[in-house]
Image (cartoon, rainbow over all chains, first blue to last red; front, side, top):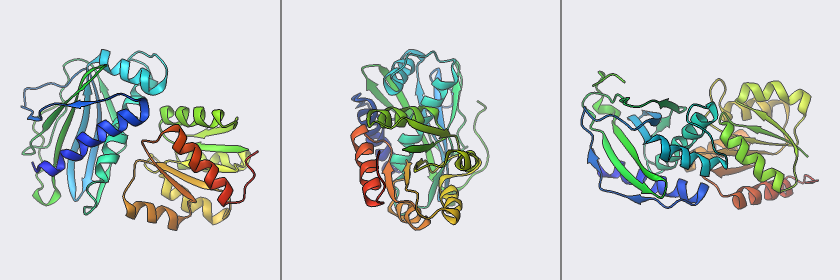
Length: 163
Length: 125
């Protein structure tokens, strides 16, 4: 995957976390996600369509997610509340939208967010599209951005794994 | 002042409510998408709307175009993650009076609201 697809997400998560709730983010070394890797307990997911296609996932352990959501909303809430999922969805929405603006020359749209909560789940990515994991260290714990994007002209249709 | 907040995220509506209450605005109504907003406009008669772009059922741009067919003057501020220049131009052509890109600080949102009301000649009381 082109490195220029990854950098905007690093900048974006730092921008969103610092602007919305003053939480610094230290970016770790990106690596390719293998098919056997499961995501953390909480995943906010955005679909990308247009001249680029794929998925963007913000994956967080429950305790980190609850701490981050508390900072974001100003309220403590458990991961089984609807408001918790809404907050996680809005976070990945802002991260994706902010990063998308860096792809100025491409007509790209993002979907409304979906949120999956539960241990051991796996988010499917389109077959043949490598998924890059970006570890992001915060005072609330480590969260991971998973970026699986490619040019639509390289389109392939099958999915590599079930969620 | 009556302000309608249109966003599918309850979290974002709560953040906006918090900023608006700090500014002294308490007459607030919420809508979760463009369709919901259109259904509430008659009864609530907003004097300012904050509208998200990406929402289910009816997106913010469609709402703005529909609303502007019947109301040319009520100030509309788009509050969205859509940050590309082409999107901003599209929204302004559709009839929004100002534009705020998420993420935003409370100060930025406050400034844009004050600026918009002044530009549109609306009393902020």
